[in-house]
Length: 390
Ligand SMILES: [Zn+2]
Image (cartoon, rainbow, N blue to C red):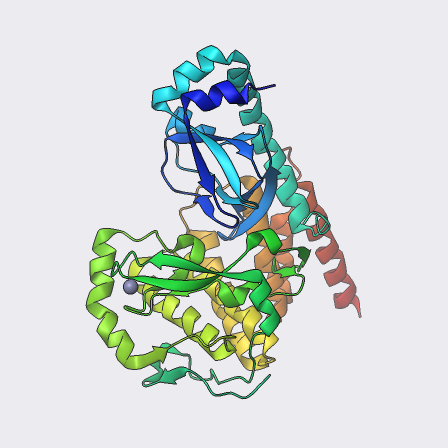
């Protein structure tokens, strides 16, 4: 057991409120944390950059040690699932603490190798939907389209409004825009309340009683910079200046203000605003692909078949570009999952031959291949063979 009381004397304790983010994956940091009170959730990025919860940690558990010891960027996002008090260990007090608590050093070493392995196993189960237990009104749109060039030609308006019950899952968060540096309030989903129901074949996570996709994109109301909430802060200074130069032009094209409860048209506008930013800021096709994949799900929900196919085609083309040409540093498992997703999208677009090719590509029999993916790929190949027979 750790002697928490004596550790507490050496370092600073810090409080985090429920749903507060302690750090994001990719952040730099030189601290590790020991939980004194409360619970935190560990979220890692799935294949296309989306966070999924892979672990919960409680009192006595620690996290963030890789950044402290090796100066590596944070490998996961950590959020408070309850009000928490954590002990902060940094370069200044680390040696003192280890000297006093040699078994902490042992636990850190053991934890480092064990945790990564566990996360990989859990992510497989999550994707396979096995971890479910662990975890229209009037359209009076507040989106004014002054120039529809930010939307594709056949995009329409849709009579769908969020349920007032969503409010129970949401809280207001103050955010400072990394582009214009002004502050504003966003609706943020309490990840502590999310219960995963299942994961679709195309990796869409279904949650009980709420669709977090509606709240995934934050829009700065001052400069219209828009991005996924978990990537919102990741803007370089030069990109911020470049975007700010064009922001007036963007605001001439569309006016967006979220209603409460929000309307699907506002949600669509937020995704298309984000695409405007991404076009300017990145050459990476997978960045656009993950936006289009989510747009396809939203179009599915509003039952616009034509736009569902259109968005799926965009996602498919961009993921394919990334698959063949991307410079990625990915694991074998991530490659398998991308191949599987490309198979699903091919199938959706009626390209059965391509689908078969990608499902076969997802099969990796070697030791580093993931068996959950292998099983799913085998199932899809068998189903395709059946369909081709009849
Ligand atoms: Zn801004």
